Length: 162
Image 1 (cartoon, rainbow, N blue to C red):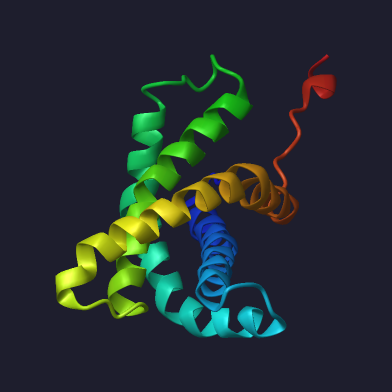
Image 2 (image 1 turned 180 degrees about the horizontal axis):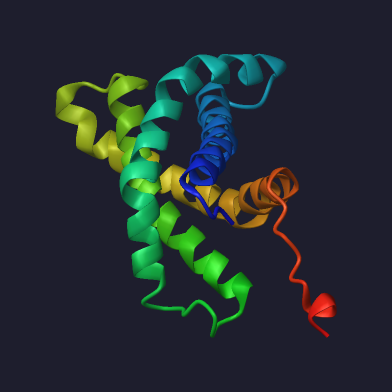
């Protein structure tokens, strides 16, 4: 997990890319009625819009808030690391999914003003299960694995202390 501000920025960029790109692919596939090779390319056009929004929300607001709320349920140093990671991830999705779904409703779906709320609610309802399971089972573990390879933690020198 990130230890410095630089590492937090790198981790957030990685997570945003993996989460947002996958969610855009999912939404385009839903709109087109299925997956095609074209969907992967179309997703990059929306990533340019949605990626910076997700980064700003996560890095400056929900990253901190998610940890604060998750630490009301789990205690670092006391609870298993996996429980801490799952709690933070779940709270993060609970905040990010409705906000990103709203941004997509306004910026990408171009819903009429009179239909923004129902379109946003439907978008959130469709996105939440995908975002939750993608984060818990795929994006989170993948990004943490790659991040760990980029920034390996120094092994504790217990053997040299003996």
